[in-house]
Amino acid sequence: MIEVQHLTKRYGPFTAVDDVSFRAETGEILGFLGPNGAGKTTTMRVLTGYMPATEGSATVAGHDVFADPIAAKRSTGYLPETPPLYPDMTVREYLTFVGKLKLPASVGKAERTSRVDAVMAKTHIADMANRHCSKLSKGYRQRVGLAQALIHDPEVLILDEPTAGLDPKQIIETRALIRSLAGSHTVVLSTHILPEVSQTCQRVVIINKGRVVAVDTPDNLTRQLKGSATLYVQVDAAGADAAPVLSGLDGVRRVVELDRHEQMVGFEVAADADRDVRRDVARLVVDRGWGLLEMRPLRLSLEDIFLQLTTDESGNNAPPPESEQPHA
Amino acid sequence: MRNAFTIAGKEMRGFFVSPMGWVVMGLYALLFGYFFMAHLTYFVQQSMQSQMGGGPININQFMIRPLLQNVALINLFLLPMITMRAYAEEKRSGTIELLLTSPVSDLQIILGKFLGAIGFYAALLAVTMVYVGILFAFGTPEWRPVVTGYLGLLLMGGCFLSVGLFISSTTKNQVVAGAATFVVFLLLWIISWLGQSAGPAMAAVLEYLSIVWHFEDFSKGVIDTKHVIYYLSFITFGLFLTMKSVDTERWRG
Image 1 (cartoon, chains in turn green, blue):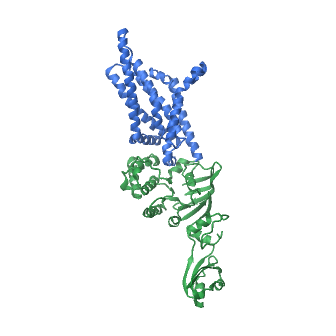
Image 2 (image 1 turned 90 degrees about the vertical axis):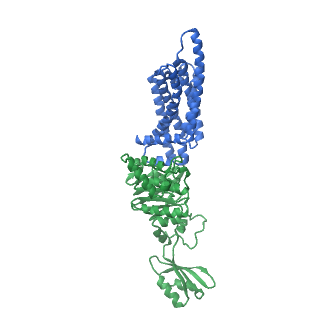
């Protein structure tokens, strides 16, 4: 479990992290989403005890990061943005060294060796055991970094951009590995790749300019932002003037024409939240003989949410297409 | 302490798997060998002259003592190369994040790095013992001043290394660390030169501060607690500064 309360980190006059609070429950994968320079790495570095915070508190697996750093570090595995490898060590030597540092003194040599073998198998690097770290490809470096974080079987895993720089196959493998770790570990991972969050994480913290903008499940975020159930309805040319009729339906708040071609016209139909107007819309369209070509729920992709949440409302950045003003 | 030894082992290993460690060791042996030859030739000349005049001259006094004093000069040039990587390289490559987020205290990391550096330095001194061994094979020097001489060298080197460690902890750049360490070593050596024109009281103070001055008694076979305490407190102070520097770095991020 991780609990962060009112965490603030200033570098001189610059505030990198500003009053950030969030929780990650045991066994959960929490995504830390934000553009570059949002304060993700700084927050993670505070959580791992790499640097102290200016204000606020952080607890990892029940240990206060500032008051009891050694105990907190013992229950934390950390993969920094650049895997911290020693180029002149082989993978096995490196993991043995990290094992000596991180495993408790009671763990003997034989047990340590079996831990090293276990994490190498888990992260699929056993075939590189005797290769020097300097000779590894980016994908292997990342996985050795992950193996290093796992070596002492920590309660909490903190992964800073674990899939950055990997090829698509490696990304899929790494995500599957991270998902398989949930349950027994609490995982916090940072990323600026949006699909990663929806595919890997149970909850998302969106952070921008050092502040938490939103915390929720990927699904809820999508729903909440939209504020209402929205449908995309496409009818043939006969229904060219359907908009006013559709808006007359009970529960429909607004109808916007999205696209119009010779043969068809498409509308965005926004209904009140928690109200399913699909049957009514379908019946109406069919009754009028407009020819229903397509009807599907419109959802904001996480990408849209991300852009909405992190775009300055005062700024001139145009909102992404097919999205409304944030409801919240 | 176990963690400190783990890190010391990693540091030592780092010297012996990198070409740099072997280059430093080779250069150290080369320079020591040169001084050995020079002093030996001079000593042979002297003893021939003295045989015509009086009795034989003392090999400890005329050969081993100046030879060991010359090691300070070799240290001046080569010890910065041992410590310049210590922190700078870890910071540059990001491995410092591994050390600082492992369940290890700052003090353990610093002690580990210091022990690793002094361990490698001890290996360098061990190589030079081969030369001194030749003197024992062909002559009959006193062994006690040799032992105290090496003890003094170890302590003197420890001072240099603790300062070097501190300087390395302040920068990411190895070259800057190396150059700055060299300059500071040099200043700590020649600080006593000012004393000659600064009046007797000041001269005593400056002489006391000079790292090399404290070595003289060791090379004569005397272990004076005054010098031991000077060296040990110097090392402690260097490590203390390193600790503060690492801590400061954390706060600044």
